[in-house]
Amino acid sequence: MSAPVYLGDELAAAGFRLAGVECSVPERGREAAALAAARESAPLILVSAAAAARIPEAEMRNATAALFPLVLVVPDLVSTTPLPDLAARLRRQLGLES
Image 1 (tube, rainbow, N blue to C red):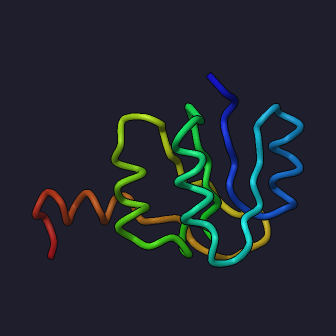
Image 2: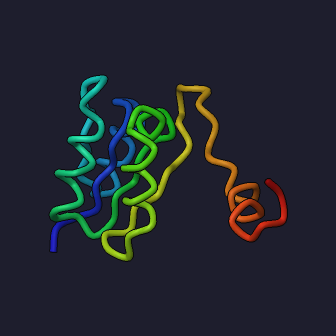
């Protein structure tokens, strides 16, 4: 099995590389293709919030819902892209708010 993969900006990728994570800094618009490629071999995929925002919502939803590989959205060091509001998502799914 290969190492975990990080998809995102160069600054964070430099730090993840020090921890033994394989990193990909996809060109703008190529994030979905990079995610698809990583899903073929990586056991864990960390996607920056900015990169996740540029991947079509349905593709991100399918990737994060899959049991394998585990796909997580992580905060950005540089960008101001917020993380998804998981609590609000769960409330909507449970029918507690519309």
